[in-house]
Structure formats: structure tokens, C-alpha cells
Image (cartoon, rainbow, N blue to C red):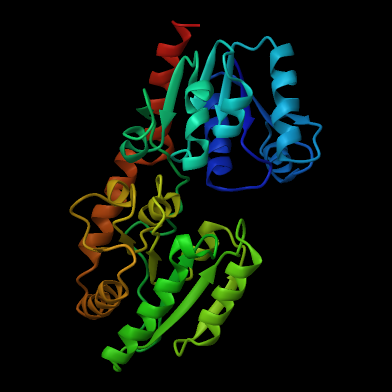
Amino acid sequence: MRVLLLSNQGLMGGGEVMLLHVARSLQELGHEPVVVAPSHQPELLSSAHRAGHLVAGIRSRGRADYLLALRRWARRQSPTLLWANGFLPATATSGLSNRVVHLHQVPARHLQPLVPAALHRATAVIAPSQWVADRVPGAEVLANWTQDLSTHTEGPVPRPIETPIRVGFLGRMTLDKGIHDLVAAANAAQSAAPQIDLQLHIGGETRFGDRNEERTVSAVFAASHVPIVQDGWVSPADFLSTIDLLVVPSNWGEAFGLVAAEALSARVPVIVSDDGALPEVVGADHSYIVRAGDVDDLARALVRFTDERKQGAIVDHIDASRRRWEELFSPQAGRTRLEALLSRIEGAV
């Protein structure tokens, strides 16, 4: 089956990472995916081409222009299936038949009036988590999956306890991702327990943020007493191999939390906030779930982690997390779910 994967944008974000995962799984299942993205943002098109996928660039000068051009282009195609990977392509293809709408987050409040049109006549509406599906009419869950990022078969190789604990943050450095809360919590933890030695490692940029937010984040970094190492835009595999602990302190309504699932895969301990679908990813019995936006709660979790690390008490936690990834978020698990969805869709198109 030929599947046109219509991207939400041309820059690489979480939704675009998943689009490439879907494309790879489609190929493995014997289908023909084509990645469709705007020409004014060629990053996704380049990544898809390097991965060996067919691509189609939509000539555009901006987001609004891409929406209109994508609709004109899609109406001229005769694919077996349109896969609208985000709210923009869902809106652009409103009313067209043989269409999957794949939403990677809950549509923003100002977009809510457009939701009925975006979902009109969709063969299926899918979401990455139950948290999102509960907030989108008629949606069903197709959980995200990740590559296998583990470089160890029996858990990470421990570093000497005396060295600084490298606490990682991976993603866009914006306030909704909680980067400021992590810096504040790390400083509070080290003040409350001077015997611990923390070092923050930041993988990411203020991508998709504005200049005011960038200035705020820079000021937070400058005021930190805990050392901060900024690694810039780095691959999850490379980044996770260099840290002792990942923290995902989001506070905006996290639709899935791909980086948390990647940490489960890489056998890296992870602290998550109770924001959105993050508890759904790590599991309700996960050892390190803190209240979103609560700096003191996160600081206590950092201190507890350092204590449990010294005692060697995190090995079972890491093994359980890896088993959860294998069962729910591995490529095999994702491919199985995708195959079941496509089998049902093929009977309806």
C-alpha cells in the first residue's frame, strides 16, 4: 500500500521523529511510504532521504503557504492512504477520504474551533497516549516507539561514586519543558545536601521558543551555582550515553514524552514530572515521579537518587524500565501495533 506521510513542518521535532519511525515500520511491513514536507524547511526531507525513503517537497514560503499548497497537492494525488502527521496536514486535508489523522499533541485552545473540520471524514484518528486520546474526539491510541538506545546488556557501567553525578536534560530549552525548574531544583538539592556533587548536562536548544524565553533561560543558567554543561543539539543515543540520570520536568501537558521512553531503552534512570502522559510512559509504579512545577519535590528526588545510587539500589529500577520499553515502546512493539491498525484500515479504504 502506498502511504503519503504528510508532515506538520519541515523542522525535526518529536512528531517528525515519529513520522520517520512510522515510515521505517511501513517499509518493513511491505508498504511504500512517501515523506511529504515543505520546501522552505528542508531538514525533514533531508533526513528522510538519508534514511532511504521516497520524498516529495511541497514548494512553500511559510506555514500558511504550506497549508494551502499541501491541500492543492494532496487533492491531485491518488494514494491508497493519506497519513496527516499533525494538525496542519489534518486541516489541509479536511474532508478528503482514505485519511489517517495522527495528532502528536492536544490541539491548542485557539485551534479547537477547527478540530471538527480537521477530523472530518478521517478513517482513523490516532494519538500517542491515552492522555491525548481522552482529549481528542474519537481518537484511539497508537503509542510512540523509539530506537534501541541501549549499549549495555546488564545495565549501565557505573562510574565512581566520588565523581559528579551528571544530571541530564534533553530537548528544547523552553519554560514549558521545565528547564528552569530543573536548574532551581539542582541548586536546592545541593544546598540541602552539600555532600552531593551535581553537574547539569543540557542537550538541546531554545528551539521553537522566542527571544524573551531565551533571555530568561540564559539568566537562569548564569545564576546557577551547580555547574552547567551545554552540549547543544545532540542525538539522544550520544547524549544518554554520557549521563547518570535524565530529568524530564515538563509542565505544559506532555503528550507522550519520547525522551523518557528513550531513557528506558538506554537503561538510564529517569525522573519525570506528573505532567500529561509522562506517568503513562514510565508506569504508575515508577520510582521517580514528581509534581510538575514543584521545585522542592524535584530537589528531594535528586537527593534520594544520589543516596540510592550509592547504595546500588537503582539496578532493579533500571531493569524494570528496560523491560517496560521492550514490551511497549520498542520498534517491534510499535510495528505490531501499526500492523494491526493498517489491517483494519485496509478493510475500510
